[in-house]
Length: 471
Image 1: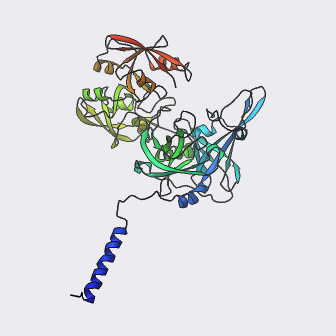
Image 2: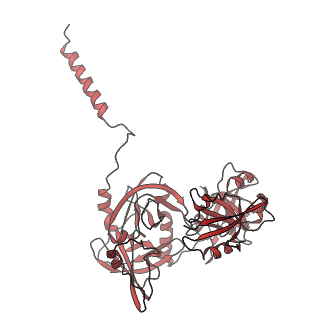
Image 3: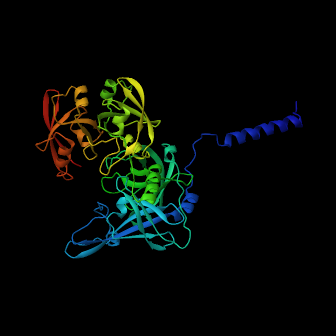
């Protein structure tokens, strides 16, 4: 029996809708990476080339610490690498920066302009300026410089690095090896990274390609906001391997505001010495997992002492923010304005306790508090060690021991290769007795790349010698 025209039309309509439904992209379906062209075009003019000149007397120098051995002659000439000999040489080093205001304020890394006799800034339109230092902060590796332009300059707006999520797309723009306004993209690989360079590290880790010359340049989110200043890479040969580190913009903002107003940074002070919490310590102090900052010592008369913090407290929250690991606390305290009544949540003998501490002013040469001077991390060896405080010695039943206790061993590191494990005690290094972090640093300062290091290690009643290679 033949179908009616109405039923045939309905059938075709249903078929058409079905095809559209199949072809339409579904929410959450895999999409290709976004285009960064509009972002690069808009933000490119905010990024500058920062190059410095310094007059030195004779000798060979290096570009920012390490020049790749296979660098072409063109680059060696570009960076004006002098031959060994006497006399004066003018050496140029190269970095990046980002304009943060229309009147010419520029953020870069302190190590880019450190000890420079002359600082020059080149814009993307090749206009050049002499720059003036407004202020430097070696502890966070941030510097603020300024140029005078007759016209308003394009500048990058500040974002909020606290809202940044692991896995987000980010864009880095800079001048790697002198290739101006190079744009690279990647994702946020991790947050809160500490690589052992300073007390106040809280790096954003990214796999966006960053190389020498990118230092001081910006890291942007997809909204075109500044969310970090590229500062360091982890590399065996000086090239990019996908491990780049940027200073979070919230820390940058705090430092820049103070440099602009005072020319220096005033930091908050708590007045405690803290240490890492491993699995054994977490169990002893009533935590369900390793977290927080264990107070090993409270400085007499400090804000912590006056506010009731006790030795053995584990600080798990600072002003409402969780402390996942000890290294986060110093940066939090440092950025807190002096005089603030800070709320702390501590674990004391397995119970939560809320304390109010009036933040003091950090003296020059001190540590915000969170002091971590009883702890040392060696990235080359893959070791983290700390001094045996009385509290730690009691918990680990090591009251009669001297030396440094191993608190962490990185996987696939030289330390892991020779089966060093957390809880062992380092007694000697190269036949030198080691009792304090100061002893450790003194001996390790004499060790060169590629040297073999002889360690005497004790665990329980037994001691053993191991040889570990300093990569």
